[in-house]
Length: 314
Image (cartoon, rainbow, N blue to C red):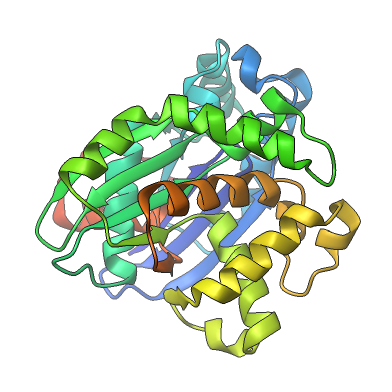
């Protein structure tokens, strides 16, 4: 059976089509949508973003039709759940594309990310902090190979931060410090959880971490080291070099950095500030990438029948 999962994120709409139960990937790609542009912190999807979102969803539906997907599962996250017109978007999606959207809360999003990460790499007895930086929210999960100790979603996505703080380009050190002060205030529950359940390493599971891994591989190894891999272990010195480069570069310089995913060139700065803050604040000395996250987590729930999601068919 061919299963399609669409993750309607704040920045990108991601589509994964897999053959189940074999697990063969038939299609995996994303569209830059920027659903949160122009209204994220006003809790509204702007008219232009609304239209762009529906248009992008139609593109993904056509891809599902081309691949003859038997079932389609679509999920909306931060931009839609926090928007006053989020239900209007869900209604328009159904009327114009025939897709039923599952609107999930932050806890469900964190749970699905955790399930996805477990498919990409093996957790160990030591606690990991899983971090997924989206456009509208950032999810944090403290877990090991036995259990999830704690999870929470925060309104700290890179697009949301960009619209709220509007930093210079390149970002000024004083602006980065202002962001760090904001994180210090907002993340007190995370720090408390980390005191109870000390974490030994960070697992990053979003497009920002994919981009950082690609730039690190291009500069210090070779792009081939990432091909066909579901995980990547960062050398922390190499990561720091790339992060510093991102913070000191302007948009054009970042755009032309080998390994940069173009749609990430503006928001990668906010991601680096947030990652650096977490590493330093929690004293974390090791970091891995998981190329799997929410979509792969959804597939786990379908295989073990642990959730009942709304589905669509063409």
